[in-house]
Length: 457
Ligand code: GAP
Image (tube, rainbow, N blue to C red; front, top):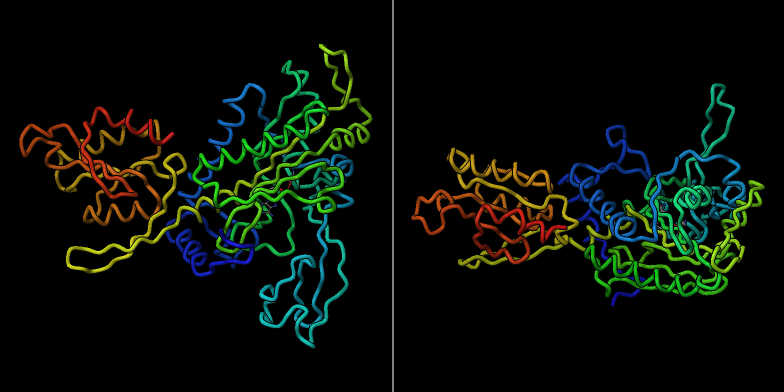
């Protein structure tokens, strides 16, 4: 198991370069020099991220009776974030270096963050002069309304709209405790030092669940949600042995939290947080009750008890999980041919349900109209169900490699046997090539859809 300090910058560089080369992730505003801390997902990155969000939604909302979904506004009223404590206290300690003019988070000072003197600054050179740390609020503010005199904030987490709509969801859906509200969407933080590719960004997506419960159940449910979330990571291809659970000690948790687990992953730049599972007690509903002056008390019809529900919050980063999926999937395999010549195959070993493209479809020969016709028919048959890619350019081996590099788990080739040109035995069948083992098998065209659906969902 890796320790906290073990890193692999070379691997990370290769991953960042593959992401750009194959259209997974680009720097936002790159054409104009780049917008620090913001990222655009290209065609394949958008598919990957969508697969993650869809699977999270399916597992969290659609396949559970006790969790409902919502989709809240990004622009958030000042009063909401005053009540939640964000306006007053959502800050990181910041220091400036008077020598290099760099600006750093005081709690994560690292020499490499200094652009001017990477090896000596901050804090390590006699010339280096750091200011005292001061609180830097991470929220992004905007003005709106006809005269632009109203203040709103781009939400720093999706959670607050869930707390503010808790009563509306409860009253309009006739649910009983315990129940959760889940939301996936954009959040914004003016991070002092965005870094490690998409890991710490200024614009990012979260996948959050606020699970409302009786105060007696909070601790137990926190442990249960931790297990549930670990299971989820396994299902999307992040093995348990690469995840670390940090039981955040007293004194390091938010003051209102009775228990917090950080789920961390072994990124190539170190072991870092993917998700927090926090028992937030009745803090959130309490502050909004006070801030709004409206009761958020729950009445239990069975026990006739009235109380403010407690909250357990599994809060995951979508972009961080996408990055973990890519880091986990990236592999370089050395292959040796019959003549002993070595070659490196780059493969993204995504589990099929996360892969941006599920199937590559090829006619063996581009000029063979019958092969092209069947390949196009297969494409049409599969397209309503999954993302497929038709490719007729170059040798079939090269086409396989191009799909390996973007993580396509299966490739289908229509060849002479499909047409019955070598006898009837294999007529109507195609070659299915497996990305990981590179093994091939023949399947009837009619069997492809159910065979694939079983493997890619
Ligand atoms: N509602 C609780 C909350 O927002 P958090 O630990 O600040 O808690 C939850 O954020 C998750 O959101 C983190 O575990 C991380 O995955 C993701 N996240 C937070 N800040 C991020 C950033 N600047 N860039 C990318 N992801 C971020």
